[in-house]
Amino acid sequence: GAGVSQSPRYKVTKRGQDVALRCDPISGHVSLYWYRQALGQGPEFLTYFNYEAQQDKSGLPNDRFSAERPEGSISTLTIQRTEQRDSAMYRCASSPRLAGGVLSSYNEQFFGPGTRLTVL
Amino acid sequence: AQSVAQPEDQVNVAEGNPLTVKCTYSVSGNPYLFWYVQYPNRGLQFLLKYITGDNLVKGSYGFEAEFNKSQTSFHLKKPSALVSDSALYFCAVRDAGYGQNFVFGPGTRLSVLP
Image (cartoon, rainbow over all chains, first blue to last red; front, side):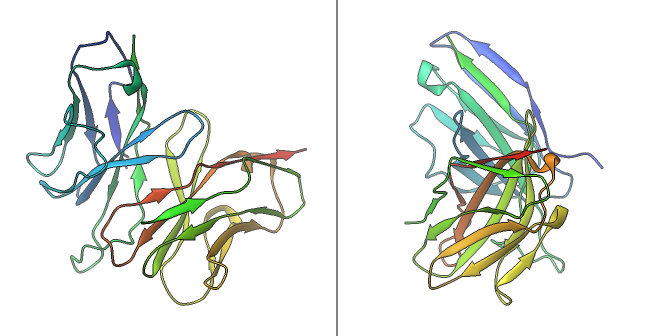
């Protein structure tokens, strides 16, 4: 079956421009996470959703970063007025509910291929 | 606050030998622990997890990990390494009582030499 997809796979933009990164989770997955991964480091949590509700956005670096998941499926991470320090791999992951409809904090996550953002 | 340490940036092992990739963690409550693997130009793939119960958990591709509460460790192991196991390995923790925020370690690059 189809996995998590992200688009674009690569994005080069100029400093000061806005970018929108898209994540399409596995069909039926309830939870969706956004991470940022610098080269040679582990993923850094940004934010996550259960259905359409943003549960935790404590990892967003500043107010230039925002995310939405309006219909509980596709999500968009938007970075306004990009800066060179925003250059990184942005990864999305989704997670299913357990059998019986229970949301659980110990489900494994299924990661997308990432979007490589380069800000010039 | 949650944290994860992977003390080795790089682990080299000969094919056929046992391998260990180390992970230690810190959480306030009970930990949920995970291992993920990342192959070049690919997303992270789930290997195994510890939630509760038996301290030795088995996962994909012959990997296993042992939860040690007193040492706050969750080392990844495999009895006989394959060249195809060469990849970047990430340990992750989530505090069971803290919500759904994963914290990942910095990663360990495993190289299995033929």
